[in-house]
Image (cartoon, rainbow, N blue to C red; front, top):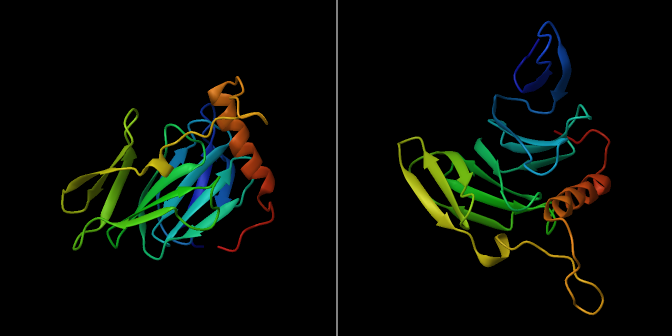
Length: 187
């Protein structure tokens, strides 16, 4: 029985069995991160070259992204429920905005030549991501304006609608989940 690539949901009260087993990756899973806005959504990355988006109520991935090399880390943006960044063993950082494009990254940048990127994180205040590699190097990258804007709701006359910014992000992810095919994705 191959155990690689399974993600288990455990109970904090009872550790004798798993509450759910999520099956989708075929090699080691390196990182799992909860979406900072949506309580049901998490993301994972793996040596199998993929990043997978999950709804914790569904045992298979909602979306899958093949990045062409082992994915060392993944991180959610602190200002948008649909933006995440991932780093790969070929030295690239990939930034996705699922509200803009559900299939390809909006930005793909080679950061290092002879090292594998292993860590990524967003600055909580400034439009910067920081990446680390397997040789101890660290690079900071400024996000382009299209990757750092929050889309505010406007009415027909172009006047901004009063809204709860957190609920806006939850609603944006809900629309993405509703549009996603809920049948198991090809892994």
